[in-house]
Image (cartoon, rainbow, N blue to C red):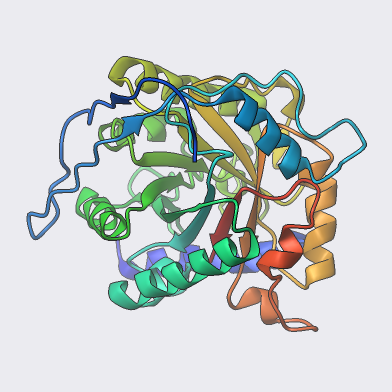
Length: 349
């Protein structure tokens, strides 16, 4: 697959969004998580093993933090009722995840691949400190959110319009994340493939306690359209398949709960949200993925994230696209912390 095709996917991410954007725990006994397959070997032979210490959650603290995230919402939607308590070692809502998104092959797909690694990690640390300053009571968990399967402008040999990144690149992302005690998200844009075909191919990484998952409905082209021509979709059944798969890994390998990110900026991107199953092994985040001026992004958040509650919420900030229209600025941590509910996952592209 030629590099130019990877760059095309970056253009999809920007152009299609412009059309549709309206937009620490306390507890009892601790145990060590299985590292499930051991270290990932990077090109320079670095060890990326992460050994997670699993602390049973303090349920009273969990409940109080969920109420805090609801920010005084009086509609009854937030916090979400009948949410199961997560297993030991859960990250949310005890920490806020602040992630850099992108792909190492392309400078156009996000900050993760735009800057040299050392500079990128330093910038991520600055953003993490900004969030900790805005909300001192919530520690920040830094993360690298890497697009492991990229939507393509070329069908490829199998006509699926997606390119699976080489494992050595995933290994590099794991290595970089370990430098900052970060976690990793592997994100999938299936195009004309399916989530059932793509997810199992990443299992050797998802067996690791520090690796989580993201699924992008925008590039799930169930109608056979080429990616980038229109917005794709996932149903609750697709999301339940993924969360069930991740839950099985958590139980099999004694892992901390996985975080599942689902990108969204239109209603049709996620259908039958009320049927999404919540599990102790998986923490589900609906991430507001649209770009634009602050009022537009707030409107998208209210219409498609707040109004259809699942479990946790996320918010994406674009270093470039959020500046295209007046007032030519990104939303600040202080502003986002006033939203109902306050997002617990923040992604920078």
